[in-house]
Amino acid sequence: MAPPHYLKEIRKQRNMTQSDLAELVGTTQETIQRLESGRRRLTYDWICKLADGLGVHPSEITEGPSKTQPHGDREIAILNTYRTLSEPDQRKFRTLLSLISKNPQPEEE
Image (cartoon, rainbow, N blue to C red; front, side, top):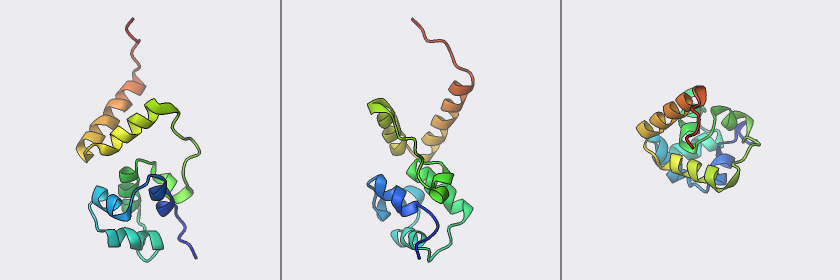
């Protein structure tokens, strides 16, 4: 019986190996393998770590990939750039994005 999550599917959609994901979240390839196979319990903390490493919302790991895909080269470039950032820089990016979306500034002409 397959585990009741979408971790492996999402990782493969991003063309990542188990080792790639393990390095991003600070664990071993063996741990990722156990999480994917259901031999290790996928706790909320793991879901959050893995979601951050994969660049998805935690619910996508438990409920399946979002049906909304990036639109166009700009969004894909932003997502790819985000995935290359360090954890502290990803937090800064999310904070900046939050500030921008809550307080939109008019574009300069």
